[in-house]
Figure 1 (spheres, rainbow, N blue to C red):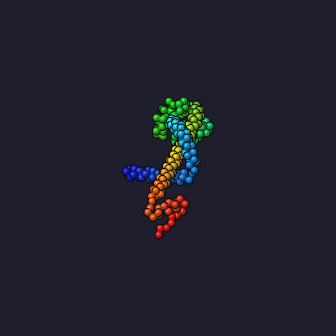
Figure 2 (figure 1 turned 90 degrees about the vertical axis):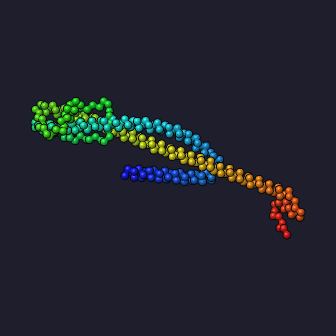
Length: 282
């Protein structure tokens, strides 16, 4: 199966290469026809301008390559940071939901007040798939969360903790503060996700611009080659006509120098001087 897949990929690549080659061949033929009907001074001027433009395009291409490399490096770091922060956001979101459920078990006079906090904790949005590392991002109670995470798998197997009204009130207040801190980190994570998205758009734009420059540069090079081909053909044609005219002059000179016994050649010479047909021989 793997061999077949590789064969199909190779076949597709060769087919695409042939397609692009045929397209470029047709374009070259079209450019040759266009160059052949142009006045020589027009196509020579265009060819000179194109060569100057190609030099400018090469410089612009180098700048684009540097910008692409820099953007890709930034994207790599941004994705790493976004994933790290996203995983931490999800971790603490689940932790706060667990705290809310535990505090909701024990009935006390503040149950109605806490219900809103528990609902908000359960409704916290989940992070997006991509995420990043951001130094200095503060999430609530790192040490405390590690201890409570160890017991997450045993939730439901043990009896849920009970709290006095004072303890429960204190824990509810702490949960509220932690939820507010988490909301700030979620906002930071959203900004990181947006930064990753913008960097990807920027890289895509630069790659499209680079491909456009390469395509136009290739077309300019094809036109310059077409002009050179047409000029070469015209020069060969002029040389061939000059050789033919020179050969005809030599033959006519030899013919004029030749004398016949019956004077027919002399009559032919006179007819040639008069730019008319020679008399028919009888």
